[in-house]
Image (cartoon, rainbow, N blue to C red; front, top):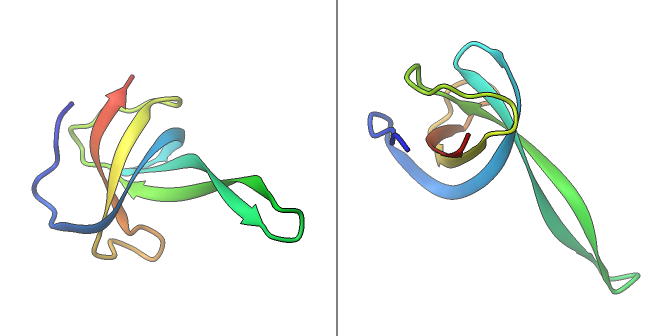
Length: 88
């Protein structure tokens, strides 16, 4: 519900479920995607995990849905920032 406007954003936007919140100012989200396998002419389900920077005013727990957006590299593995909590 709160929006983060202090960090300049650009690029891709995703919605995912929080699966880990043990790091300081960082959480890990996961979302499903489908990949087409031409050999079998079917879709395969895969999961993507992304580390996200979380501002201090956000209160997150495992299972929350989070909207994230791409930003400049914040650390070696963090290129996304949390924009809003969709469900708690």
